[in-house]
Image (cartoon, each protein chain N blue to C red):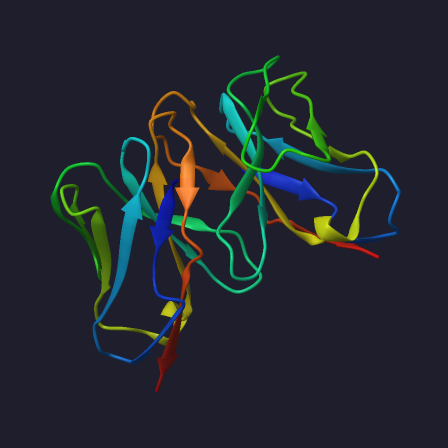
Length: 109
Length: 114
């Protein structure tokens, strides 16, 4: 079966760094997406990885290891507005997105 | 530019009633999707459309139907609503379905079936 695993909830302090992990087992792989979803709102695109390595975009970075079926999202210089759920999704062999349940990130002052 | 709009924002519906959730995009995207999001579960694909005139079944299609008469609109119909269809429904679109394009989401419809 297809499976995406990520922690249910994480807590971090304003100004700190947090790493949100995602492991996957899917039928085929055409890239991995990270989305941010604030409570009561729609998911919005953060990053896309298809090759191994680190993609940096401002305070956010995303890493992929295809051989390990593993990705992480790194958030630096945390701000209160980063409190949200972070969704990991894999594009499978049919280009359908398989979604993890999301990681709720709580930022404390 | 509105992107993707959905209507209604929320709805309370009696079991057994018919309901259509509306979705319209103005980005001229070929592919459109309907997902449901339930607490503790990831987004689950209900139906999708690769281009106007074609539709396909996703992971959880039972009890739902869709149509794609034109590029912009992709309504989702619940023929006879049941309480297990209580959920938040998101419509999304992407430039195409045959490649890992970024999906853009509408604001969602919160549906409660009593």
